[in-house]
Image 1 (cartoon, helix red, strand yellow):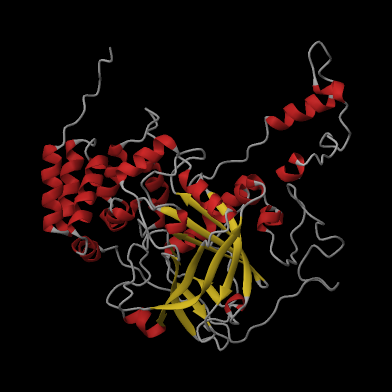
Image 2 (cartoon, rainbow, N blue to C red):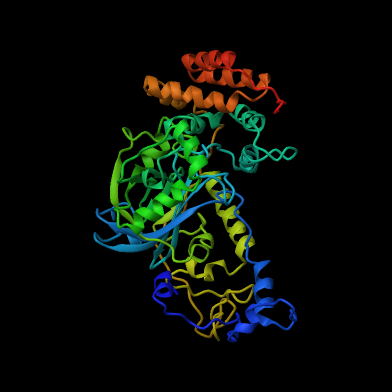
Length: 484
């Protein structure tokens, strides 16, 4: 029941979870038996079990709902049903999130952010799991748990530790391409409405004839890309740490336009295989001057959650959720993510995670049965084995379908792109970048200063020199203070 009806005096009768009405005397327990008070027992036993496992990454998040409307014809490139037909609308759920912030933490943390979209198509759910950066931090997925741990809390002190982060970054210098962005002006967007989304992966897509193309997916904020400074973030962190979440909710509630332009950065097979850069390297941004963007449609958010836990916390995304015409990506990070997200979702919410309303596709016919609820109708009396002779669901055939290509990937090398990104910054952007780097790097040990300066110098001589000079001027606060 909505707050509006409650305010208007329209009430329903209070019951236990079993549906039994609660009599007024049972709402007080002083000097009364507890064990036989069903209202008390129902409330307390539920209370201690009302949390599900928090996401290991992207623990905090904000969500909303709307649709994708196709505005341009892209049938030449993909047969994906939800992208075929100008004017076609597909319902979506969207979740934005900081990467390493725990549930209940601050929106202001300087880091890459998640931009996840679930498209409820007639051919199953397609999940886009992007970031607000055009590139990822590592090329080898075996490093991912280590990368997350390096940004989390020191196992001894329980606090975030600059030594951990910069030890990882300097041991894996390909990560500097992303962190130049994170420590730059784009490190803290001005709320989710001003944040773009990027796929980082170069997806293989195909049309009805089985001709394959490749594409990176982009969502460009119609409100305009905007960021806040470190000083502004510190103020908001102290006064409104849920600012991003609040801004998104209030904008939709007030009827403001909350939308993004959806674009594809398309490559032919020949371009993909003969490019000067590894277009499948997730640590590299594909230049738009060489591979221009093709507009596809509008992503519009126009509804807030009625119940945040049911509709947002239970949302479960996985790169493995693909549809015909979108084949996935051939890089190893994508392959790893298809496993780990599926495994995480089942661990958090059980094997029937896709039967939870927030994740339920428009239509599904499987041979999966039983397990931890919810099970829905559990397939009713359909056969529970495949193949069978009793009219169970059958597969379809697509004789034009092409396989996902296989690629060989070399060791990461994005120094040239990182240096170019730095040199394209304005004077003010460079100053703020150096300041933000020193805020993070300064408290680390001198050995990590030396390693970081060496890598910054390899990226750009001026960058290395300015970081070195700023570290010389950095004054470390004493480890112990006398507060009197």
